[in-house]
Structures are given as C-alpha cells and as structure tokens.
Length: 429
Image (cartoon, rainbow, N blue to C red):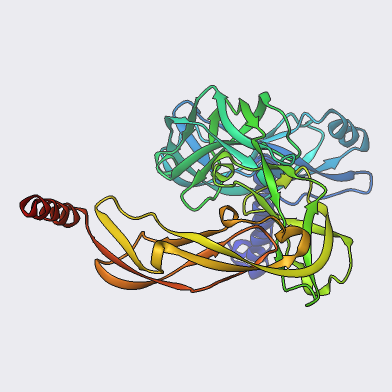
C-alpha cells in the first residue's frame, strides 16, 4: 500500500483528478453567479442578443447615482422556444443592487431578472463603475427663451411673455446644482404672427458656458404664453438724386407714385424715423420725361415696408435763370445767453440767383428762399461765418455772397451797453 502511494504515477493520477474536480467547481460557480460568463452552446440551442434596460436599486429619495448605462447587451442562450418567448415578452431586465453601499465610487456586478431558468445569460459589461452621491434639491425661476426670433412674420416682435408655473424644483447632487446658471423654456417663433397662449415647452437647464445639464426637473414642462405686436408707422417718401441734368434742361418735377409708406420696426426704431428715401436717381442719365423704378432705402432695424419699390415720374423743362433780391439773412439756434448783430451784408439781406426749370422758377419770391447762419456754436467777438441758402427742390441757388460778418456778445453785456446808451441820450437832452 505504501509502495502504491509513493508511486509517481499514483501522484500524477490523484493530481489530475483534483484538477478536474477544481475545474468543475469553478465552472459551476461561474454559472451560478448570474450565468454571466461564456456558456457552452449545444447544437440544439439558439442564441440571441438583446438590449436590456438597467434598473437601479437604491433609496432614490436620498441618493443620486451616476455611471449606470441605460441599456446593456444581454445574450440569451437556450431552447429556441424559450429564447423566442423572452424576446417577445420583453420582461427581462438588468439591475445593480446598491442598497448596502455608502456614498462614493464603487465597482458593482450587473444582475438580471425575469429570465427563464431554461436560459443561460451572458451580459456585456458584466460589471460597471458607479458613483453614489447624496441628493440635493433647489427651486429655480424659469425664464422664457426664443428660437428663430428673426423668422417671425414680417414686422412682428415679442412684447412680453409669461410662464406657468414660474418656478421648478431641480433635483441632483449639490455639485451639479451649484453649476446651474439658467433655467429656460424655449419657444420657436418661426412665422408667428399672433399671440401664443399656453404652449407646452420642455424645461432646459444650463451652466455658465451654455452646456445643458442632465438633472431631474419637476415639472419637466411648463406652459408659456407670448404676447406679440406689429409696430408700424406711416411716413412720407423722399426722392433722392445725384448728378445734374444736361445743361439745356432742368428737372421740373420728381413725383413718386406713392407719397407715403408704412414701415414695420421696433417702436424705439420707429420713433426716430420721419421719412423714407429712395435710392439716388442719377439725373445725368435723364434726357427726356420718363418714369423710373427706384428701391426704397429702409433704415436699419426696419423689418419691412408696405412698398419696397416705387415709380418716380421725372419731368424736364428748359433751364431758366433769374435773381431773387433782398432775401433776409437770419441767425438760427443762437443760445439764450448770447446776442449777435450782422454788419455785412448791409441791411442783413442778400440776392440769390436761381436756376432751374422755367416752370419751377416762375413766380419764386424772397419768401421761397432762406438764408441762415448757424448760431449754435459761435464765439464772442467779431467773426466771419458761412451763409447757408436753401429753396425748392431741383433748383440751383447761387447767393450774391457766401459769408457774413457778425459780432457776438453775451446778453448781459448787450443789456449794459443799451442802458449806457440810454443814460447818455438822457443827459444830452
């Protein structure tokens, strides 16, 4: 017996038996542990792979879990009837059990349930890394945001908006909540030409860089109402020109077929607009009476107009010239604390030569011409200043002199001088 036990062959046989038993034990353990490893497949077995939803078992009123995929790949192996039944019923589910774990990062195995005992299961991945954090919540105001605002119906603008409810509760980790910079419900304004009443919109949460954050929002949607308007203003049309008509003729009239247009823009833009002009019409190319189409030059921020192109009737006439005498020269915009007198031209009058279509200059008088001096920024003392002359459109004006000599003094000094003159006159008498 001792000789048999000491035999090398006996030891080899015993070692082989133990190795086989150990292999069988490990294989059995692997199969028991969720049958999540590679499994042998017989010729009668069927194999199919499905995406299984992953559940989380934890007290979700206290904790937030990250790192858990929405689905994992689950391979089902077994009789064809059982595999087919599992796929049709779709009751299978993977899950991680975190009930006994503390906050922090853990590597956990994936389990499964609702799978027939006749089937073997292999999951990929078999384990995952999860992070458990304590849950935090906070109330945030919801602001309304807009997409495609520049594609609203012509002329329309947003006046105001309301959201109901005005606040939402956001649940996540405190670290994520501290990153929240804005909470918005967006409304698409494409082609909007009327108020929006109680439109449902999802709530989006963003950090300071504009990145959307994945958090639990309650409620997930809010009702947004948007009030819109279409501000407009009717203004006259001005015809702009450049160049000069041929020497022997002048423009007698420029008559637009539309005298006024309605423009649509934000109210603050409309408040600063008093007229709309055409593109410049080149008079040097006009040799006869004709009608020209001209685009309107809409000011900045004007969204649209009732007309964006008009027709202008141009009439020519023989050029004529005459002189308008005794046109008064006046000082405009002189500050209240200054007074000014004009020493040249004498009598504070000039002559103006007018040139243009004969039908236009006939009957012109001094009342139709203005000669002015800008007094808004004059210094005290005697000085030479520009005389600005203006008159009817399409008339060329040439003043007999282009500058004037004036004396400017403070109103107080002028009053004192007048009083001294008065006293001197009285003593003389």
